[in-house]
Length: 452
Image: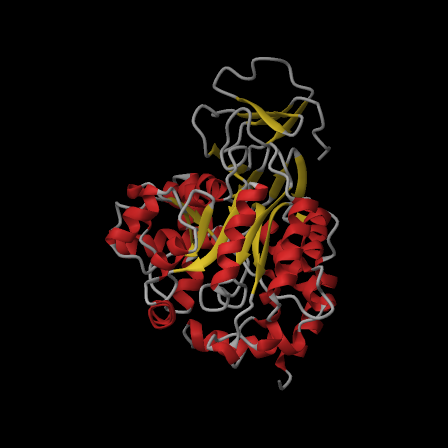
């Protein structure tokens, strides 16, 4: 299919669209959605018509928490069947010993490719590892996203509090304070673009309260004010984290977050499981975002995010796959299904719908990143779309096509468009040799099975 450029292109007569008033599809021009097509057809002539009669159309999915490099340590024999802290202690030394720039690049490339194939058009990676030969790790991620034509929220994270100081991280993963702050400023100056339609924005993202210093948290908030960017960190993921914060800071994680100046609308948090009722009220009051990571939370038995209470309080709920070594994949469409099932397990079958789960992965996730130009199918938004077919046996007999994507387990998009350009065609990412990527990545991953 051709690039839409400035032409008016009608995606005609899809099976269904996740939007009101688009019974006969939508019109795209200049990288944006310019019209939802009702029963009467387009309001003006179109230069090109794309037959979408085999497709169900969703907004491009938005992933708001990931660790791309962890594709290199999936199902690692030393880390399976563990909760978060033991899992981290098993893998931190592996990452510290074996991660280099070439392996890192392949890990990033594979994660982004998987996400794109699952219908994801915008990805955020929580990057906190910088090996000795990869001080430009953020730049590598920017290059790989550009290569695939995806939007990316680059987060410059850090670990500067290791095991020798009472933390749990391997010392080899640490960077000193001055290096972190200097590179945050470099990355913000080079890549942060908050304009409409941007393909790159930047957030400052110290890893977690248990592996960064208090001063780094405080000064990261100051950087966010200076550069008008978002803030991101892990919080409320496990009971072990609660105990750590009480022991080291004399307060619970959210109180600590407030103490370091992070209780504001710039912030979105990963996981957000172990908040009490008052903490949920405070999160809602400050319009803080929470990225729900259902698959990882189930694998590590971390708990269940209180999505319904968070939204009712005014907090923003998005969706993420989390690290590809705790998920253990990078498939955001699968995480939508898991969010639905986990939500129903907590709240009941009628309380969480397939529309809720899709909305978390689209509009909710976009709001976590502070974006109003993606995440919905409506006129004026960016033309970021994921088109799925219902041709597989798993969908045979399905009555509601949009519900079928979630309930019957869709996991691979047939077409993906980003900014009006096709980036996946017939299920394959444009310009990517999947067999070669699998071979090269597999070879790189074998290093992490070696003794530390």
